[in-house]
Image 1 (spheres, rainbow, N blue to C red):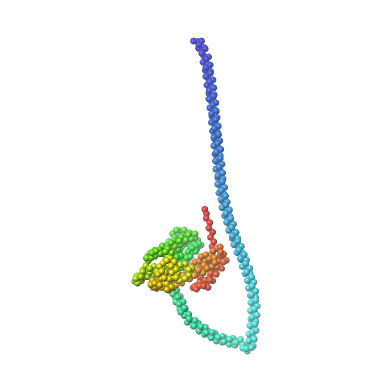
Image 2: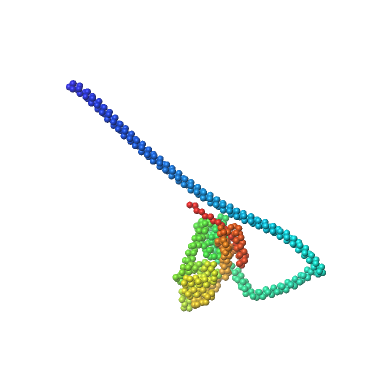
Length: 522
């Protein structure tokens, strides 16, 4: 047992050593393998990190490049904007320099011309003085010769000459008095008509004022200042856009709109009410509102014409006929509203036709359309009856209506009983007390002629007769009329008005020249 144990112990020891070596070897190999795996893993992580860092670097570089490119574009846009602004300023300065150079040359020419005229006047003045002295000397010599020849003193000759001249003057005065009396006999009727017309005009002055002004009530007195605007720019823009004179006086909480054209005055009234309700009152807004109101009122004219024809029982009328009938609301005939007058004539024609057993619808239609020629543009010349006949003929009205419209002032022969009906109804409507005032028609024609005279000059864009015909405002094209020509144009218009028209007092001619530059900020 002892021997066996003795031999078994070394084997155990060897085995233990062998197992220890094998464990160390295995542990070493496992550690080396783990170390190798860890190193490979570390290398993979490093490679991934390097790739991510490279990608991040590229992304950041791209972001930096994009930011740089965006900044560069903004800088380029700003530079282009500044460059364009600089070019525009440079062009404006160049235009102003050219304009100033032209004015400078014109002034130089005028100075040269004035210098030459002064020299000529001075020479003529000296020559005139010399001739006057010589003439006085000759007169004295002739007086002395006459005294010697006649044997009379100067006082005696003066008395004889005065007596002779008195006799001749009496004879000439008698002859002229006879001529005046003969002329008065031939022109007495015309003179009487003129005197009567003046008397009618003077008694109708209040009526004329009432039909050419509109009173607009204000919410407060502060609104007057907003209507006038800074340095009057709002009221000037409003008057230029509407052609209506705005009178701001001491009347509490009210302004007055004055103008001979009822359509313009209505546009001005509605536009001013809209501006006051909106609260934004400035030149650009004024022009926008006035244009919108004008378009809306033109649409309203069509609706008024359509409704009026339906009210008097007229159907199937052409749209142009409806539009012209609507215009009657803003026209007057001798101070009488044309639409009310035409409706009155239509009803009278219908009543009389019913009494006579005629077609009431045909008579009413003829009466309603009898004055439609007065609604045409002022530039179309001719009697309104014949103009109206052409209109109803153009839109294929009944031949009886065509003849009644054309003959109601005896411009053409009457061909049916409906024509004298229209003529009689027209006379009844116009002749009733208070229906018409003679002076208003002449007043409107005078204002229209003022605008026509001013529009006839070259370079004139628009004309407005305001302040009851006491002023004409002329808007000219700035690229065709410069400041010097504007002064001359005002003088030429005033001279033509003075030579072609008769009017009380004086008429002021105002020429307005302005240039508008518009740009949009985007």
